[in-house]
Length: 227
Image 1: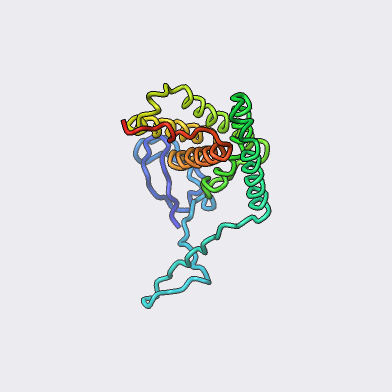
Image 2 (image 1 turned 60 degrees about the horizontal axis):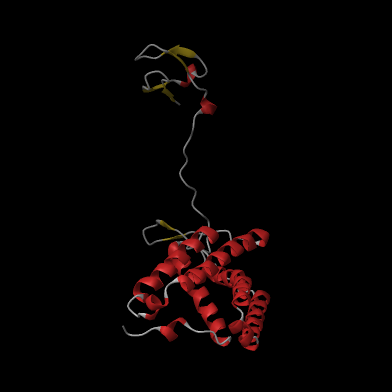
């Protein structure tokens, strides 16, 4: 069979008889020396083999077998642990409400301690299934970074002047700005896309607000007026 040859000098393509395989000769176009490849060195392209399990249409054309959908696995033990831990934190928040109200430093420490586990819980159902999840020590390092960032956003909220927080119209700017920053923190910490990072920031806000409400702390909406 003829051998396809590509001249390395002028890039001309031509075919020669297989009896010249492995020999040298001049390019018919630019006269540069060319080594003819051997027959076994030729790249052969084969038609795809039909799967024995493939079905055919009425015209005889093969049809591809659909890939079975892989169902998400439900892990009972981690779920039970997460539920028990959540109930324990809620109970502690309700029982220690007076202490949290009186001591700002204790509130800040408690917020930092619960922030990382809350972000891990949110990451567990917001991460992309097609990507390998973060696990082990590296997961908790990321959780600590994300938790500290989220807790810092509550600190930023506390620094907003009370008269700005009291206006309902200002919350059209305050709320999205804080949650947008939270989405950026989640993106940098957990490699989430911006949408899921925004949802993680919303989830964190909802959980921490619930804990604060159980502890009897002042809620952001309690100071909002219609002005």
